[in-house]
Length: 119
Length: 225
Image (tube, rainbow over all chains, first blue to last red; front, side):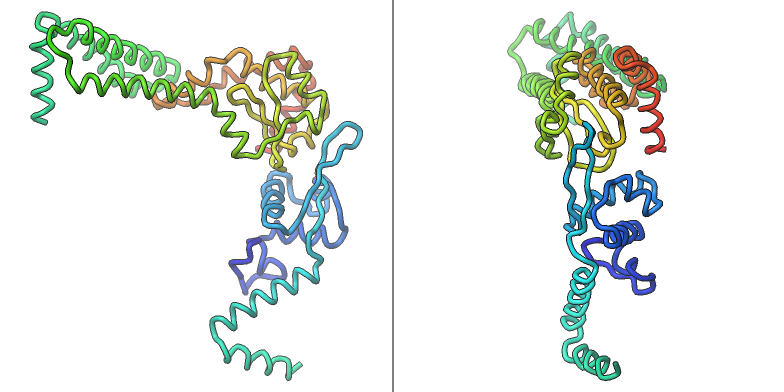
């Protein structure tokens, strides 16, 4: 979920933190920047039925912004990611580390330093 | 329970010779309403429900009129409930679009597509609003038509005209329709009437051409499959 209140460790890649459709949309936006709804459905290969609600949700949660554009008398949305991939990764990491330290305290910190030593 | 029986016998004494007549009307409306609950045909169901409501209201008016002794508190309470609920039902239906505009954050469509409001105004006196949502949908309520940007993105001008004409029909020819719908809900019959949608579609085809209507339908059906 976009609010990042649920993490599924067993899932692959971004779907650990996002739903598969949210992840696909974000990946497409990060790869190609600004795009319209039809470009998004084309790139992600997901039908509009499934994408439309998710897009509304991503906008509401602040992961993407959209503006309405008028081209040849037709109205269309233009989507843009709010964070870069790097910014999103750092936000997710910070949130998870915060919750680990909050739960396990010094033990979590001790493990972090072990981890960075290993690296 | 005792209070109710006491009240009822009091009514009987007050009404004297009229009591059986009124009892008949009341039992007719009770029978009608129970039949309307069993029936599966929504149209019949609605008709029976309206009849039973009318005879119920008639019996109340009669009791009020024929009462030979001082009126009773329960009668006052019930009549004021009746008036208040009828008023609320009408007021809610008439002004529900105001609530929707605020709740959905709808904005006048003139600001994004200026010809649309003029097109709707030529058909009926309704205001067109757009919703900031990617989910394609359009609906009419009160004296307002709502259309989402998701739907605007999908349709070309002719198809959009067909959709707008369809919604305008709902407002133009059915200012009483929301009330019927409300009654249909109260009578536990289905509220979506395919016949009405067909009539709205026929009107849309007249205004925008059947081709535009058909391709708009196709596009929308593909999304909502």
